[in-house]
Each structure stands twice: as C-alpha cells, then as structure tokens.
Image (cartoon, rainbow, N blue to C red; front, side):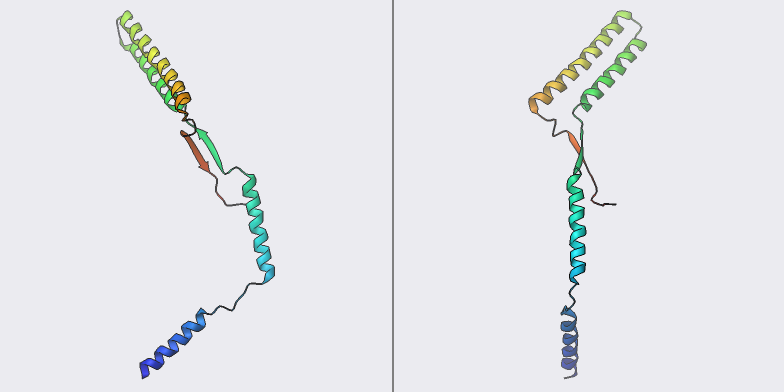
Length: 125
C-alpha cells in the first residue's frame, strides 16, 4: 500500500509539472516577430553565398608546371638543339593544356560545377 501511495504522489507531481499555464505576453511575442522579420529582410537583401569559379585552375597549374620544366630543360641540358627541342615541347604541351581546358569547359559546360560557394553566416550585428 505504501508503494502505491508514493507512486500516486509522484504521478501527481509529474502531471502538475507537465501542465503549462505560462503564456508569453502579446507585446513580447510582437517584439520577437518584428526582430525576426527584420533579420529575414536583411538576410534576403544580401547574397546568400559568394561564388569563386575555379575552371581556370587546371590550365594555370599546367602552364606553370611546363614553364618551369622548360626553364629547367634550358638550364640543365648542355646540347643547345636538344634543350630548344625540350623547351619547344614544353611550350607546345602548355598551349595544348590551355586549348584543352577552354574546349572542355565550353563543350561540357562545367563552369558551374567547378565553383566554390562560400556561405555567409546568418549572424547579424
């Protein structure tokens, strides 16, 4: 019997704590809604994300790499004809990389896919 009475008291305490009679004041509710709408308006005016296109990055890295390789070939190879041949080959591959990048971007339409979007934070000052 003692356990049943203790359980009944605990149930009454739990039920009393679950009842919520507190309702916020209408002024507070209106102030919060106005602040929320103001923040939404500010966020809508600003762009959501900054876009950084990276379609040209493979082309630039290819050109830098083969330019350095051409310079290295010019400095390291003793035979003048062989060094000019290596430099010409490096310049040719660099220009081919530029052409392939431009044609690939136009044909595959991947400019939008190779874009980094930097999201802005939603915190307002």
